[in-house]
Length: 295
Image (cartoon, rainbow, N blue to C red):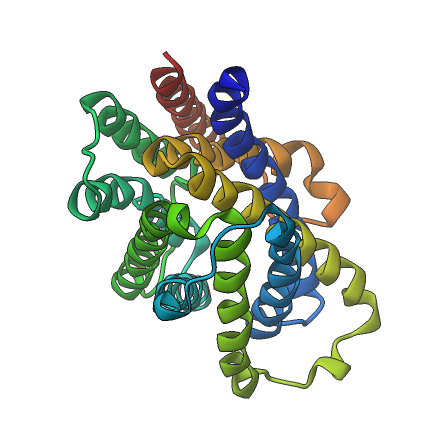
């Protein structure tokens, strides 16, 4: 039991990072086939809510008088998701994604402000290294960016919302138990997702038939990585450590696009030598942050 409590908080965030990359590649392919971000988010949240219902047998205590807690956590989840999509829609991925890496710093900050336990200097250093690594991993020399100011604003807001969500799960889930807080919270997320429907550019029945396998598999992987990551927060806490390990998805995404991107008909242009050097530096910093957490 002690071994599991030591190993699982390390392995599960790393696994979630890998599953996330697979989900993004699949969902991106469905987007290229005309699904759109709002319909993708809606389907993703419904599938994720279904996956989180599997935690019900783990039991816990249902607090009718505290329903506002999972509901509020669900609101922050949706706000983070919404701002994320707006940032990607209004600006460039190469600008938005590095800014979203600031979530790690926000988690460390909100852990200090909202929880009774502080964050060690080692974790602050790891959080800083991870954020800098994400910036380098996503650097594209010579690229033209548009709406940079708004993109940074939306992406930074998304990082802050997701960070508050992580910390609130760590704070409130223990009193409910994993088998109650997480299914109820994702139930609220699915309910609130009905607000996405008016933003669909076409009904779900008009999703191209060729897009459905990519959409469903992508949303399944995205939901699965969310289940893995959030369960770590609820069961073991340590939101800052988990986020540092989870941020390795920046490294895995670079490797996946280079090695497997052609399987998903990824259109990313061939990287130049300068970009590769920056991304290599980012990979080294990412590994340094992970080692710092593990030691």
